[in-house]
Amino acid sequence: MTMRMRWVIAALLLALILIVATFPMRLALGLAGASDAGITAREIRGSVWSGALIDARLGALPLGSVRASLSPLALLGGRTELAFSRADEQLGPLTGRLHGSNPRGMSEVNGATSLAGGFGLIPVDTIRFEGATVRFDEGGKCVEANGRIQLSVGTRIAGLDLSRGLSGPLTCAGGRAQAALSSQSGMERLTLSFDGSGAYRARFAINVDRDPTMAAALAVLGFKPGSGGFVLTSSGQF
Image 1 (tube, rainbow, N blue to C red):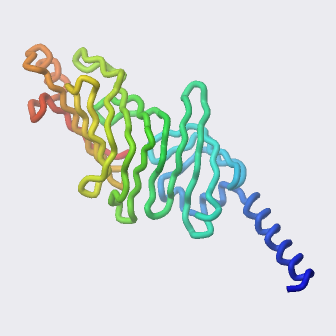
Image 2: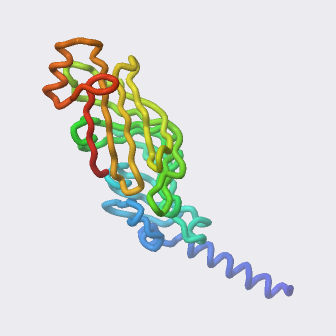
C-alpha cells in the first residue's frame, strides 16, 4: 500500500469519525426507532456522543432531564443502546442504559424516580432501582430480569406507615417481569408483574393479625379477605 493510499484511508476514517461524533442525537434516536420502544423526551439536544434528553420518559416512567450518549457500535448494528445519567440535587442521581431493540428494555439502572398515579388503587409514590435490568423480546415476553426495586407508599393505609417502602428482587415468571416485594416487618406484601407492552397486575396483601379494627378499615378501602390477609388487586397500563 502506497503512502498516498494510506493518507486517503486515514482521511476517510477521520471523516467518518467526525460525522458520527457530530450526528444529532434527535435524528439518531428517530432512525433507531427509540419512540417505538417507549423512549421519549420533550426536547433532545446535542450529538450521539454527548446529548441531553429534557423531561425524558421510558413509557409512563419519568426519568427527568438526563445526559445521554448512544453506543456507536450498537447503531452500526441497527440497535439502540442509550447510556443515561442524571445528577439532580432535588431528584437525586439516576443512571442506567435503555435498549430500544430486541431485547428491549433497561439494564443496570440505579437511583430513584417518581411514579405518578401509582398502580391504580395502590398509592405508590416513588420507585428505587438497585442494579435493575428488565428486557423483553419482540413478542413482549420477559427474557431477562434481575436486580431489585423498592416502592415507597407515602399515603397511610388504614393507619399503616409504609414510607420505608417494600422491596424485593426482579425475575421473569411466566413470560412476564415480576417483583415480589415485602415490607421490613413482612406483614405487607406486594406482587407486581408486567409484560413488554407495559400492562401490569398488582396484588397488595396486608396481614392484619386478627385485628378487627384494622380489618374493618381495610375493607372500607376496598381490601378483601384472601390468602395472606386482606388483599387489594389492581391492573392497568404504564
